Length: 437
Image (cartoon, rainbow, N blue to C red; front, side, top):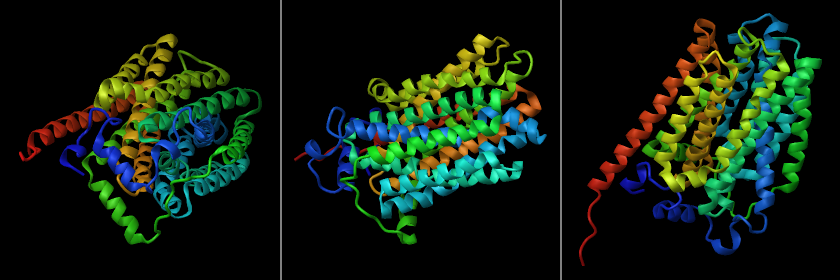
């Protein structure tokens, strides 16, 4: 990889070295005939299948988040303790995403994604019967570990099966599925829980996830460009070491973690804020607040066009600025302004996540599943940290404490992006001129 390619490029879709690297990493194929592209055969089925996988993943992963006030009430615990039902799931995913990505390199992306969904939905059937908070947290940790096979494998599948210029859009659709799953899961659980309690609510989500899993397996096209890798620890360690040695990948991992720290903290705590004074909203209305995820669906699916217009760095600056504006706006004691703040936070987060995750797929020249897994691991570590630290900050200083944590994380995103811009400029200045023949 040339020095310039380790900086934050201005247009991830147009960088010739990356496109060449992606082509070199895959089997030799005629891209014009065999890779999936918008409007081509199989692309719509693939998009719908991975969209449904994204729906199931986020619906299951965050199925308890909107229900934390009810869980706190049943088990007699504070927000910081109940938040572990979210943090355990995202933490389990963060810990197991790298091993699961290794399995996908050996046994195939579709196989691992199918098995992961099967285990996760099976555990989802058991979650409503948890007899204690400890048992609930344990089941959620197992569920998160099972879901670890989805994110990295899906990103690697897309990098192999979709034309490079359509990759940002394809990953944006998968991320849009995440937003729909997160939204629908929280809205459904909010209204169901208001009538029948949180246990019935998470059971309903489990049933919906079963349907998504079955449809996913039926729709997803058979991979045509997968090449089995090795499960030898030395080979895997070499791939991980290479990815962590790449300055651009390190920056993208950190950006993903920081964006998710904001998102995890805000949406773990928002239910407590809205059910307490001065708002005092009922559980069903609080669940409906998550309809703002629809904004994330739009911003994620349009991330590709945003990168074309502004470049990757410009898109990340815009995403970070939008998120920060939403955080500050949410401090107002007015429900409409709080909702507008959540809209901006959601739009900024999903746009930033789609840009960063697609850039990982384009930057990695080998071991794409490991590269994507490291991003997902950082991303969900950020989610666990945000859920826990955000709840602790809320307990200590109210909503302002949670917003403070989020603003610090956004400042981290801006700082890292600016550092990438400087690195790219320095690399351009020091790159030797071509020899005159």
